[in-house]
Amino acid sequence: MGHHCKGTTEIVWRAVETAHDAFADWSRVPAARRAEYLFKAAAVLRRRRAEFNAWLIFEAGKSWPEAEAETCEAIDFCDYYARQMLRWDSPEPLVQLPGERDRLRYLPLGVGVIIPPWNFPLAILCGMTVAALVAGNTVVIKPSSDTPTIAAKFVEVLGEAGFPPDTFAFLANAGAAVGDTLVQHPLTRFVSFTGSRDVGLRINALAAQHQPGQRWIKRVIAEMGGKDAIIVDAEAADLEAAAQGVVASAFGYQGQKCSACSRAIVDASVYDRFLEMIVARTEKLTVGPTDDPDNYMGPVISEKARRSIFGYIETGLKEGRLLTGGGPARGAGYLIEPTSIADVAAPATIFQEEIFGPVLAVTKARDFEHAMELANDSVYGLTGAVYSANRAKLDAAAERFHVGNLYLNRKCTGAMVGAHPFGGFNMSGTCSKAGGPDYLLQFLQGKSVAEKIA
Image (cartoon, rainbow, N blue to C red; front, top):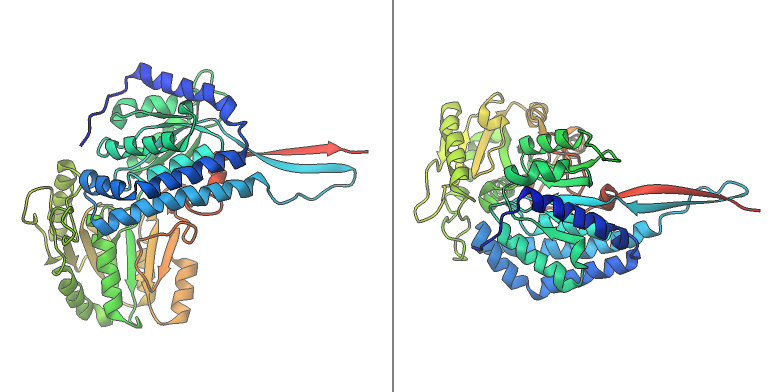
C-alpha cells in the first residue's frame, strides 16, 4: 500500500519539541486566518475526493458508498470546525460589573498528540487534527499502522492548504513502539485518541502521571468504542424498516464501526417474525473485494482481526443459536460471512464484549421495560436506537437509554457532522461530541480578563 519510515524515540522527542517551538507563532495567528486554512483543506479534499475514496477502498477495505460517505465527512469536519472557531473567537458577552470591562477569551493549549483509528482513517483523523489546529494548537499525528498511507495522503492535504510545515508532524509507527513516549513527553499538552477501550484507558493512566518539567495536567479526549443495541418494540410501525436498520447497522463496513449494532433486542411478540426478516435480508448481502461495487461487504482489516472475530463466533455458537453466516466468505482476503446468533442471554460474552466485526447477537425481551434494561446492561454507552410507534416509549428511551447518541426509528450508524454530535458515555469515552458545537472547547482554555475603568 505504501512505504513508511518508522520513528525512533529520538524522532518522537524531536517531533514534539519542533511542534512546541512552532506553537508560539501559530497560536498568535488570528482565528479567522486559521479558519481559512481549514476552508482551503476542504477545497483540496473536494478536488481529490475520488482519489481518497479509492485509497479508502484499497487500504481500509471500504465499499464505494462507505468511502464516499467518509470523504464527505472529512470535508464537513473542515468546514464545520472552521465556522465554529469563528464563533468561539467572539464568545457571548459576559455580565458587566459596574466600573469594569469583563471579557472571556479562548486560548489554545499547546502540542497535541493525534492518535486516530484505522476504521475511519480519513474522517476521524481529519476531524481530530483540524479541530486542534484551527484552535491554535500544533500536533503530532501518529496514525494506525493498519492505514498509514491514507494518513500520509491527508498530510499532503494540510500542506496543499498552506498550513505552516512545523504546525504538524507525521509519525508512522506502531503505537506500542512510540505511543507511550508521545503521551508521556513533558511538552505534550493533550492527547486526542480514538480506538479500543484498553488502549484508551492506558493512555488516560499514562497522561495522568506527572513528568519532570511538565507544567500542566494533560487533557485526554478519548473515543473508546461501543456495544450498541437496537430495540425493536412490539409497537414498531414497520418491522421491515427495523430489520433493514439492524442489518445495515450491524454489517455496514463489516461491523467495524464503534457505532455498529452488535445487539438487537427484540420484543417477544415479534421476535420469531423479526428473525426471519434478518435472515432474509442478511442472506442477500454480497461479500468480496470492495473495488467491485457489487459487493456490499469487504474484508476485515487484518488477519489478527479475523482470528479475533472467529474466536467470538466460536464462543457465540455456544451461547446462542446460529441464524446466518458463521464462517469465512468465499474469495481471497480476510472475508467473513455476516453472522447473526439468536437467543443470546445478557451474561453472554457476545452480548457484553465489543467484537468489531460482522457479528450480531439477537436477544428476546419480555416487554419494552425489559428491553431497556437489557440495552443498558453494558459498560459502554455510545449509540443505540429504538423502533416504536409509541410516543411514550420513545420519550422514555430519550430519558433512560444511556448512550451518547440515540436514534429513534432509524439505524444507529451514520452520524452527520453538525446534526449528530458524536461521543459516548461510560467506557465509550469522554463524550467529547465530535462534529458538535462544543467540540472545539476540548482544545481551548478560557481566560477571564476584568479591567477596572474610570
